[in-house]
Length: 485
Ligand code: GUN
Ligand code: ZN
Image 1 (spheres, rainbow, N blue to C red):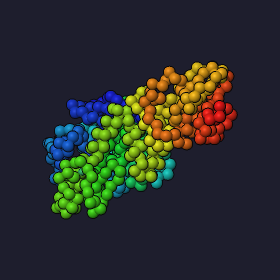
Image 2 (image 1 turned 60 degrees about the vertical axis):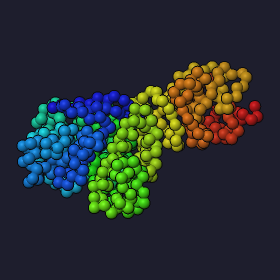
Image 3 (image 1 turned 90 degrees about the horizontal axis):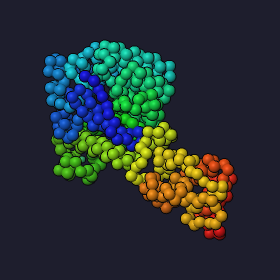
Image 4 (image 1 turned 135 degrees about the vertical axis):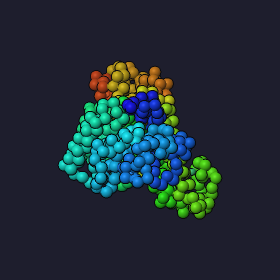
């Protein structure tokens, strides 16, 4: 049974895709709820009715369970869990990370996962914790890569085995790990050991390691972000090019009396309203939810609905080409998530290479919008404009005599010839009243034009209130005050 992945739409590095495992198909980005066979707050069948196409469960728990081990081996996982979508199994590596050891070998867990009919099998990778120094991260990675090779040889090249990418917090190791795993031959690669980063809000480290792993992977590989499922960070995960998320958050938060939203979680005791359209929230008052004997299950249902709705919103945004705008909103819900977003923007050069060429719109939302791929791509193109000897960039639309070429101006992009005024992004961008951030970005566009045309002489006609800023940004370029010429 082979795993295949097909990319249908793209936005930033995100993809709408189709993951196929044997006869079963999953639309991506997808969230795989974690199912604990011992305490299913929500049964896999109910999940399927909520639109879940794939789940993940822990093979280690099955292998150690007196009740389930034999049943799983005899009936198969799909029958035991009563779920006919894709079932991914984890190896016990998570226990390895939390407890430091497991009583199972790599080939034992792989063999067991195969025998219970898992759709996606995970080897016993070592999740290197963020506190590991580089030497330990290298040693653990060597063991992980050995186990991946061992599993690959054991099951054969076309098997439904996942190739986890480890390497701790070291981007170079992550990239090397990804490239090595890719070379062995995998179409499904989880990026591992990121849970401790997310638990401690280290989103910029998360972005660094995921972007490094992505550099080493083929664009046609389906990428799973192991243990990521908080609705506030899914847009960021998807934007980096992660296709699969899995999460126990819906259940763990419910157990802790927490109500998930896309902008953080609330203690159920703090709620006086249930601001959510899901069936739980529309059929209960906040007081009823707090006092219900079924509180934990109701919270879990709500939490899962919220998470699945966010996945749907992300898929819609990718299809529409508006993921940057969703990302900008989501990443403002926590300052550390904003750090992650800013780190992500530092990878704009890589992102620009994979992002779609034309989108239906560009909404300016924040200073961060200046770092978007559309701005970078536009400014790269400025170097190709052909201009005469005397060039005027008019910020006010006013045209002066004596110039060979006149260009208009729109921040944060920069100068544009009138012929581009209807094309993306100039024509389809909505920009609020100019501010210093977007003017600085626009001046970078003017700088591009000047650098690409060293033979030309550039003048900028600026509204009075922006003359000072433009002069400061473009020290060696003539800046005229539109009110005095
Ligand atoms: N669950 C959360 N993180 C990991 C990881 O790094 N590896 C495996 N196998 N499972 C995980
Ligand atoms: Zn709800």
